[in-house]
Length: 345
Image 1 (cartoon, rainbow, N blue to C red):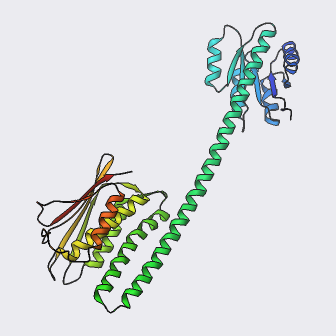
Image 2: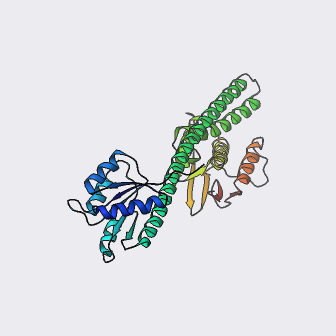
């Protein structure tokens, strides 16, 4: 298919040069419309579309620079090639600063029209490239918006599904007579809730790929404090956290680790019917972060049999491995101080 001819509006007050320009440009394949001055040129450009406009500098009533300004003020201005004399470098610079796409020095003979045609082709090609770039950016933004909406919906459904699973586990736990089995299912319910918190935050925030860990851990710790604190054995769980965001998978792993370590401290660090505190800290260390969970309880006796089933320890170890890290314990701490150091990404 033959490509459509480039539509050119040529503005010049010199009738002889206008006719010469028309013949030379039509010979080179352009579709040319002529205007005898700035006012008529702006009116024509406002009434019909052009691929570009050529504007001569010296014109009565409205010179080239004023014509350029008015053309640039149109709702969808075409690119403009400014035509100047050979000694008018400052005018050419002023035209470029005012928004001209290019300038051509006016000379005598066919060489001028060859230069003009070359400038036209470059300007039109650049304008087409910019339109394609803008269209691609618009399409990309629309695609990203659709993907963000889809991810929010996915996270919403995942959170709802996890809530349903948590409810079923809760009902099953209440139906059991064995205290150990009931406690195990309750621990499972809390693990599910820790994961569900991540997905709830993803579908309620603008960022659907990363989790604000300070907000997430604050909500998670509040739930854990409400779960483990009683009138006879109050548990004060506090958080100190730097502003850190983590990708979804790393946020889930860290949330599960905090759930296990805080739950273990609340259950086992302090004697029955005594108060106790648990402190959680999340610090940023350059491209890494450090999590610490500590208490002032009875500590860990070397070689002692675990108080529970040991499943929590295995869960913590597995989650730490998914973060390419390990949990370390400070033997000099009065109670238990567990620390994890891992990369942010």
